[in-house]
Structure formats: structure tokens, C-alpha cells
Amino acid sequence: MASARHRRFALLAIGLGTSLPAADTAVNVALPAIADALLSDPLAIRWTVIVYVLTYACLMMLIGAWGDRKGYWRVFRLGLWTGVIAYGICSLASDYLALLIGRGLQGFSTALLLSVGPALMVLVFAADQQGADQQRRGVAAYGALSSAAAALGPLVGGLMIHALGWSGVFWFRFPAALLALFCLGLAGTETRNHDDLGRNRATFQALARRTGQSAFGLLAQSFSHQCAATLIRAHALHAWAQCCGFTSMLLIPFLMVHVMHQAAASLGLVLFAWPAGMALGNSLGPGLIRRIGILGGMRVGIGILALGGISLALFCSVSDPQQGPYEGRHALALALALGIQGAGLGLFQMIYTDWVLAQSAASERGVAGAASLTSRTCGVIVAALLWPDLTSQLAQNFNWTWSEALALIYGCCALSLFGLLSQTTRRSLRM
Image 1: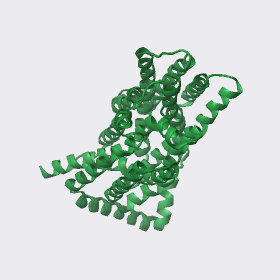
Image 2 (image 1 turned 30 degrees about the horizontal axis):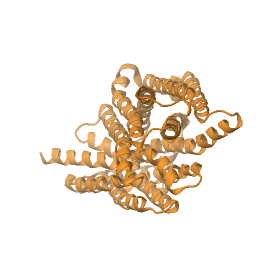
Image 3 (image 1 turned 120 degrees about the horizontal axis):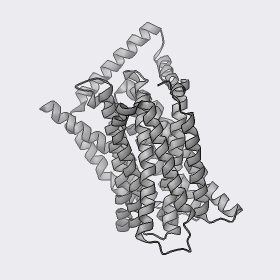
Image 4 (image 1 turned 30 degrees about the vertical axis):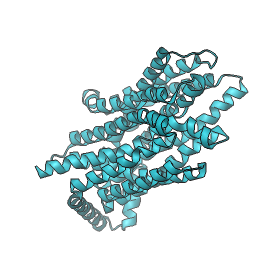
């Protein structure tokens, strides 16, 4: 009974901890409000996203390797404490520089949490029984928890903005981090941490004796495994899929506020559809793999993602700030398109992550999980750097409305995904 109780609290701690960065979708709801309150140039709002994701993108692989050697639970606990401090700084920020400092620290917390999150979930699920099915259950559960938190983020964020202003999107995660730390204590993870650490150290020592390599050499070898040609192709495809999908969370809030003239609460309700679709896609992944295989599941995910992009392109092409008032049916159509796009991205992301973990040894799951999250982050950074400027330039140079420029970007992204879909063969990924 004690073991089952500890496992439940461990799962709850992982779920709450990984929900903290996932719930950052709430910040997307607050981007227009932050721009109005702290900025004179609205385009500078991109740094709220870039500083955060660039920080954890640069650190995640190194921290994942550190977790492989020092213990996943230790890294996870440090991430929770760092998050408590970061959310406090962001919530109390009185100017944009202070907010960016808090976002950088939040990025460090996210690197700590996400770099070991997939490995911890697989570890907990595989405690009683090893095997590919247990790993897939762990990966799917991790993705579903993250997507559920991401889905709740816009809803809670809209309510928090209404009650507390833009800082509310940071305040509500403060008690969640403390609760995760409390559950971590009840889970009694210290013993398991030392067991896992002992197994990993024994594995690395055996490898060092067999290969004659130093600890640094083994670390470099872990990184080099993620640079194999087949993995590089998969990482690049995942990064581009994330770049195409994150367009919605970055720019749809501005479409709803400045073109559709929607309030923050309505904005949260519509954006909820995107991560909710991701949660659905994650949950469908294991069953789809059993039916049509990993490659077939990846292709289905990319196809659904592209269809969502086409739907959003059609919606944006007919959106006009002079057309209003926008009714509930318009918001419903937008939510449906976002849900389709999110479902495709969630499905592809789950199957891709499972495949990447399967290519790595058990002692390198921290690096493998971090690599999958790093590729996602690269896609988000490219989206944040590229799409806002490109949308504005298209609108100015061709005398288009902002929504028409956004429609062109969605359409081009969808066409590129259909093109990549035709190139995703069994030989290209050797599945």
C-alpha cells in the first residue's frame, strides 16, 4: 500500500511540476495587456517569449545529462524551488526589464523541470513492469498532463487578468509550485532517487571501463547519439511542426483583441481549444501506434496539423477589423480550427517523443527527453523571431490587412507540412 501511495504522490508531483511550464499558455492571453501596460513598441512583446524559451533551450540538454548522473528527482525539486522565486519576480515586476529578468529565471526553472520530466514519468510507470507499452503509457501520460495544463492556462489566465491584471497569469502558478513540493515530500522519493542514481552510476562506470572513456567523453557520446542522421531529421521535422503550430498561440491573441475586438475572458475560452486538442492528440497516440505503426501515426499527425493550418488560413483571410461585430459563431469556428491544429501537433509530438526515447539507452533518457523538448523550443523561438515581423512587413508592403498577411503565413506553413509529409518515408526515419 505504501508503494502505491508513494507512486500516486509521485505522479501528482510530476503532474503539478510539469504543468507549471505548460500553463505558460496563460501568458499568451496576457501578451496584449502586457504590451499596453509596459511597452511603447508592441513588437517588443516577442522578447517575453524569446527570453523565456531561449533560456531553457540553451540549458535543457546539459541539465538532462546532469539529471542522468545526479538523479532526476534532485533536479526536479530544484526546478520547483526556482519556479517559486521566478513567478514571484514576474508577478511583482514594475517595468519590462524586471519582467524579462523574471522570465529568464522562469526559463531556468523550466529547463530543470522539463529536462527530467519525461524520464521521471517513464520511470514511475515502469516501476512495476518494463517494456515498450509501459514507456508509451508514460510518454502519453506526460504529454496529456502537459497538454491539459496548457489547455487550462488560457481559461485561468483570462480569469486572472480580469481579476488581477496581467500579473495574474504568473500569480496562480505560485501556489501550484508549492503544492508540487509538498507532494514530492509525501512521495518519499529520496530512496528511489538514490536507487536510480546508483543504477545510472553503475551503468556509466561499466561503460567507462568497457570503452576507456572519461565521464566527459561519455557525456559527449550521449549528445552525439542525438546527432545521428535519422534523429536529426526527426528533430528538424518536430521543430518545424512546432514553429507552424505556435503561430496560433503567438498571434491569434492579437487577432482576437485587435481584429475581432474580444475581451480577455473570451480570448481564454477560444485559445483553450488549441492545447485541448493537443491533449486529445497525445491520448490517441499509443492506440494509433498499435494500429498503424510509428511512421503511420507521425504522418497522420502531420496531416491533421496541416489541415488545421488551412482552416486557420481560411478564417484569417475573411477576418476584417471593419467587418464586426463578431458573433459567437465566429469564435466557435476559430476554436474548432485551433482544436484541429492542436490535435495534429499533440499526436505528432507524442509519437515523435516516444520514438526518440526508444532510440536511447535507459541511462540516457534525460538527454533524449531534453533533446525532444529542445527541438520543440527551437521551433517556438523561430516562430517568435520570424512571424511577427513577417506579418507586419507583408501587411505594409502589399497594403494588406494584418489578418490577410497572417492567412498567407498559415497557408504557406500548411503547404510546407504537406510537402514534408510526402517526404516522410520509412527509409528516411528507418522505423
